[in-house]
Image 1 (spheres, helix red, strand yellow):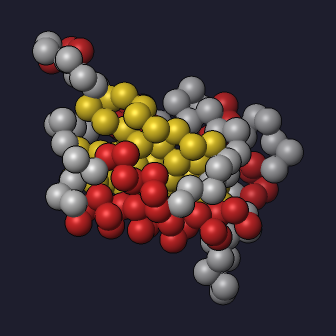
Image 2 (cartoon, rainbow, N blue to C red; image 1 turned 90 degrees about the vertical axis):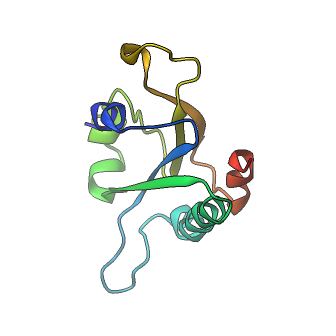
Length: 130
């Protein structure tokens, strides 16, 4: 589901696609079931804002991971998905345009950053500020 969607998106050399897989949020408390996600949610948003303030075009795709479909479920959707291959939440991926793609059929994306299970600080974005 994710890879065809991402491949179809027009991405130029300055665009960033940020995919953030995080635990679902309780509708009452607005907090995730995942304690690390509670900490990382504002950091991811702050990083995206820093990038936009620096003039980068950023698309944030936030994927909610249900607790019941993730914990103790090695066959869970995001775990077995060939692109996501989710090992832990939160997971942050930053996708960029594939470098050196001259021909139309070679155009696509590269995973420039992947943080699995680490609680990202807002500093993850500084790598992409030009």
